[in-house]
Image 1 (cartoon, rainbow, N blue to C red):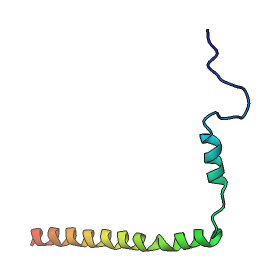
Image 2: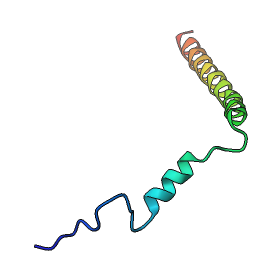
Image 3: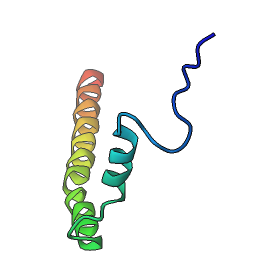
Length: 69
């Protein structure tokens, strides 16, 4: 039976694992400031979703109220 395991050790012949690890380990130039800015930017869409859900509930309540009357 053939040995299909390849060379032993940490060498990745394709290099994809090492390149991915290097990419993940890189620190962005903004550091923590960039992370906090991203967190602040995500608050806008969250507020929009909440307002949309409240508006949808209000429309459904209005339709039910008109159906009962």
